[in-house]
Amino acid sequence: MNVNEELKKRINSKRDKADIILDLGNQEIIIIECKSSKREYSKFTSVIRQVKSYAQIYSRNGFNIKGIIIVSGCFTDDFIHECNTFYDLKVTLIEAQTLVNIYEEFKQSKLNVFPVTLFRHGLLQEDVIVKALKK
Image 1 (tube, rainbow, N blue to C red):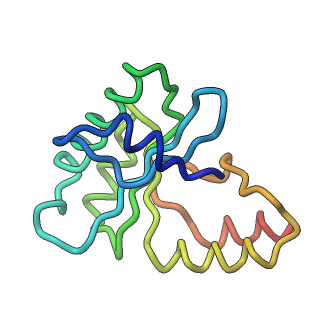
Image 2 (cartoon, rainbow, N blue to C red):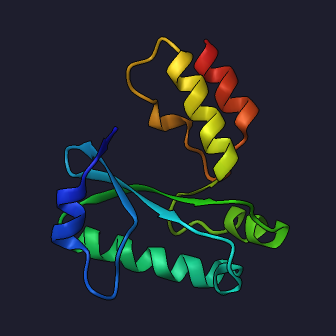
């Protein structure tokens, strides 16, 4: 996957600043939003409003949004439930430690490119991803 800093600098606005843009090629991207443990983001509606704004900006610039990934130390049950019932965009939730563990497993795998098809809607299950990487 290609983290595209140049694209991010070109399209992000003063108000709307996506954290990471994964460029999949062919005008397709994944937007990654990283959240720390703060009260302001504990509501799914406020986070999704934020990332939908990013998605709209990139869509207006000709990009196809293949998904949104939200990374955090943890997610509340309510946050996960709301994500699971939200279908405007494909939103994947990844806990930070899960991301580290998946990365370590990926480094040990025979794969050269991480298969983006493993990013599913809702909370990412580490054991499912690790099992897929071992195939």
